[in-house]
Length: 308
Image 1 (spheres, rainbow, N blue to C red):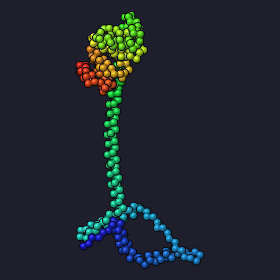
Image 2 (cartoon, one colour; image 1 turned 120 degrees about the vertical axis):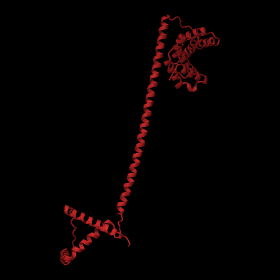
Image 3 (spheres, one colour; image 1 turned 120 degrees about the horizontal axis):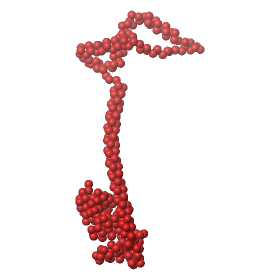
């Protein structure tokens, strides 16, 4: 037997029509008379023309009684469908196209919500990672700032100690230019270094610093003097001169060598922590343009001082 396709709305209308048919046959004539009378009463003559007046049907008042009757009708329809299916005459109920379209929209919205949730999870993960990196960078910055401050204080202490030493010595060196010019005095001190006269060269550089305190080569003179003192096993004096030479961390050609030798002099003076700080400045400021031999020396000092 061929299955019939009936929508839920059609089934309800069928049930309603059947009920009206049974009840309406008993009062067909009176109802017809009433209907005709109402139709006649709806005709109004205006200016010789006949006009039909139509009225909107009253809205359905869904009270408890009407809802109960609707529930009974739905149950009857369910029983009728069950009996038809059991008798081998199934009724296929087609889904309402509007409902299907609405369900599709709901599924699409659900998928979009899932995509948004995944995006939010990914963004939260990125934010957490960036926050961790920023916190790590801030800690590194604070650590570097602390090291720089410590090294700056160290330089200031060394300068103060050198000033006190000079005051105690009564200032034995008086400004004097053997050659009569700044460049001549510096070149004369360098010749003494090349000739291997370390003591005379050290005195020449000390005299140059006292005589030409505003010279642009005073920092180099301290570097040369510190080198001579380190070679003469005067680590403390070498530290003072190297620290003065590196004030402001110059970008001169001798600055990388002076920084490594400062670290070496500090390690020789049992100041490993300060030596490690000097090596840190070497790595950040000068290592890239330093010679392989100088980087190897820095690595050796780093191992001896047990820097972290």
